[in-house]
Structure formats: C-alpha cells, structure tokens
Image (cartoon, rainbow, N blue to C red):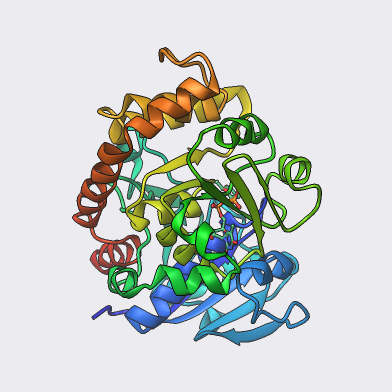
Amino acid sequence: MTPFRRLDLFCRVVDNYGDIGICWRLAKQLAHEHGLAVTLFVDDLASFKRICPQVDVAADRQQVDGVTVRHWRDQDGVYTPAEVADIVIEFFAVDIPPGYIDAMAQREPRPVWFNLEGLTAEEWVEGCHRLPSMQPRAMTKYFFFPGFTAQTGGLLREAGLERQRAQFEPSAFLSQLGLTPAEITSRKLSLFCYPHAPVSALFEVWQNSGQPITCLVPEGVAADAVQAFTGGAGVATQGALTVRVLPFVPQPDYDKLLWACDLNFVRGEDSFVRAQWAGKPFIWHIYPQDENLHHKKLRAFLQRYAADLPGLADFSLRWNGAPTPGEADSWTASWAALAAEADAATARAAEWQQQMLAHGDLATNMLSFAATLR
Ligand SMILES: Cc1cn([C@H]2C[C@H](O)[C@@H](COP(=O)(O)OP(=O)(O)O[C@H]3O[C@@H](C)[C@H](O)[C@@H](O)[C@H]3O)O2)c(=O)[nH]c1=O
C-alpha cells in the first residue's frame, strides 16, 4: 500500500502519440492499481483523443477513466500549496508552470518530484537512474529512467495484462476489424512506422514471397506507400500480399492488434514496449534523432535483445537506415533471413518477456522508490 494519496503528472505532446500514450498509460495504472488520485496535465487534447476517444477536446477539466485530466494551456497559472499533490512527475523534463513550482516550495511536506525520462537500452542510464538533482528553495528532483535491467525503473506494464492476453480471442477481434477468413489464416503483420521507412521496397518483397501475407496498417501510417499499393482503397491484394488499412484504434485495441499478429512493426517508445509484452517477434522503427544518435540506441537494444538473432538484427538496422555488417544485400535476402529465424525469434520474444517481468513494472517501482524518500 502506497503512503501517498495524490499524484500530478505533467505531459507535453512534442510529437505524435507516444508522449501522451505513455503518460495516459501511467496515469491510469497509478489510479486503478495503486488507488492514487491522479491529475494528468496535458497540453494537446486532440492527440490524446486519437488514442482515447472519450476525451472531450473542449474541456478544461474532465474525468476520464478515473483520472482527472486538465488542459494545460499555459505557464501562467497560480496554484496554492494545497493544490500540489504528494508526488509530482514531469515527463521528459517538461517545464512545470512556475506558479506550480512556487506552490511546491511552500508545501509541507514537499512533494516527491520526479523527472521521468525516455527509454533507452544504453548502459549509462543505470548510473543516472534515481539520481537527485538539487533545485532552488531546498527542493530535490529525482531522475527516473525506464529500462531493461534491474538497475533501472523497468517498463510500464499493467497488472492484468498477461491475463487479458491469455484470454484474448484473435479471430473474433480480427473479423470485427473486417478481415476475411483467408486474411485471418494468412501470415499477419501489423505496420506502425515513421514516414521515412522503406515500406514500398518491403511490399514488393512480400508481394513476390509466395506465402499469403496480410499487412494491417493503421490509417495515416506509411501513407504514400499504402496509397501507391491500394490506389486509395481500404484493402488491396497484389500477388501474395494483401494490404488492409485499419482505423487508428483506441489504445487498448492496439494491444489486441499486436497480440493477433505474427510479426509487428512498431515505433517510438510505447508501441515498442507493447510489442515486447505481446510476446511476438517485432521490428522497431526508432524515433529519429540528430547525428544518428538513434542508431546508437538501436544497436544498444539489439545487443541486448537480438545477440542470437542475426537476421532480426540485420533487418532492424536496415529498416532504420543504419549501416549493417550483415550478409544480406537486398530486401529479399533480409526478409528471407528474418523469416528463416521465425521460430527462434518467437522463442526469444517469450524468453525476453520473462526477463523483463522479473524487473517489476515502472509504476510500482516508482512508488516504491518514492516511499523511501519520505
Ligand atoms: C497505431 C496506433 C497506436 N496507438 C498508440 C500506441 C501508443 O500509445 C501510441 C504511439 O506511441 P509510440 O509508439 O511511442 O510512437 P509515436 O511516434 O507516436 O510517439 C513518440 O515517440 C517517442 C519516442 C517520442 O518521444 C514522442 O515525441 C513521440 O513521437 O499510439 C493507438 O492507440 N492506436 C493505434 O491504432
């Protein structure tokens, strides 16, 4: 049982859906599983609505699934010490409104203050996880890093997730999405990537692969390649490949999509983690950064995950435009090497999941650490 009652979480949507996707998942879990009164301050309700259709984009303050959601419009708000929660989380080092920080400094006791950082497999995070950073007016902020080892905060995971996955019925879900029986029995891939992914090249390989493949693409993803393949129709088949455009589904249904597919292409941070909990092989399109910093992060992950899966490692590097020492010199060869490893990749996905489960989940780890600070 946590000694804390209230928690405020500040989220700025920098880009796409990962920032709000992670904060929303964390906020719900803290409220549902740990009984905290959670307020999520978020600056972009329209992005939020894409993953959570109940959100009212016009509301300044609303209750959504047990969480108070406040539209964070500006930095000018005035807050009283009584409004400040027991725990305050800033996501990705966002600037909390100065008026709120003033109120934090006047509150007794001071709140536990976290900066929740982004996920990376690089080793340095172990040295920075939980480090204190002295703040003006005798306050301390703690860095909290998600991660893949026991020396980090672990990964976000809801307590009931495995049970839900075990009870999941893929055929019913897929037919609700409009898949035909033939598509349901074919090899199914989900595709979520950034616009620069070499999707058309891969479509060509799958088209000529001889084995029926259905590629499920959320609306708006890989838009040019999908348009070129389908000619604007919701579904099209050429050769062995069927490409079917799906609606952008609410966040819980995205998990089901990952559970239902044989191979998932994911991106960013949150879908990347969800693919790991899905226990299925996946290919990660990492969020691009200046000076190819993301290639370093990708390699750090592949070193941990795919040391015994050279086909998957090579394919992942190529998918992200990173130099690869692999043997394959075409997408056909890369795909063949990946496909040949299918059984090993499935076994590795299950093994990795067990390894990650052993580190506990990020929300629980964060609250346990917060309790030591009181
Ligand atoms: C495809 C799909 C995704 N989603 C959800 C799952 C995730 O919560 C969210 C997508 O988030 P991500 O996978 O993280 O990818 P992303 O690219 O959308 O998000 C981010 O990547 C981060 C690394 C950056 O820091 C962010 O600024 C942001 O760009 O959208 C749905 O709810 N329905 C869908 O149909």
